[in-house]
Length: 234
Image (cartoon, rainbow, N blue to C red; front, side, top):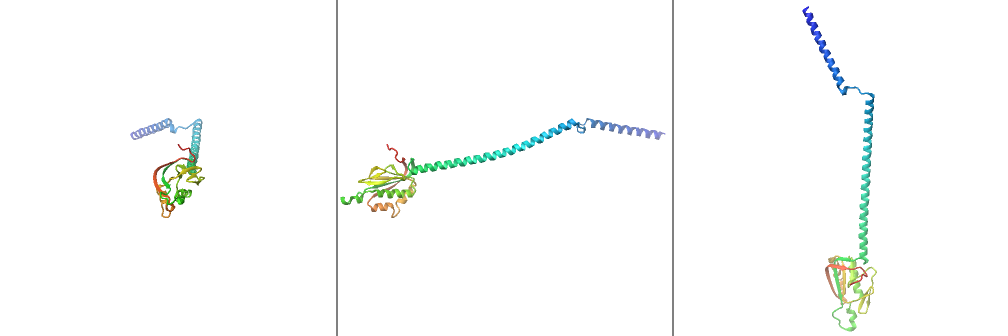
């Protein structure tokens, strides 16, 4: 009897403990939100939120793609603008060079000055014309300077162009209708070393002029200023 009573007490304790554990588990599950079942309205709201989030993500990706395309388009326009500015700068430089070559722009720079003078020795008056400077002598110098890279040329300060003419008129020469007497100073802007070397080559222009009894002097100059063609001189 005592053993049966002891077994009943043990069984009663076990049942009580098991019941307490079940009660505790139920209460914990009831109070835990993660285990709570959602209502239909809550599931609907969750679905709406997720749909809205997906839509925003898609719109964000679309906007990013549009931004990339606009950035590429902007870069292309910037390149076109840079190329256009480069072309315009090139055209402006070319126009300035053309104005310089035709004598329509003032030019400054290094160069040479070639002075042609009548011979200091004239044996007889009958042969005097053989010892003075003629237009062909001036043309020889001008032509040699131009083919040697001169950017601009002037005779006694008068700028010449591609349409200029030089003719003899008695003891003087005319440059585009303006008379000049000897000595004739032919100024040219360009590389002084190149221009002077071209003139004094053996058998070149200077030697030919000396054979024609012309006094020639070639000087390198650091600063020459040539006014445009037909510009009024002070």
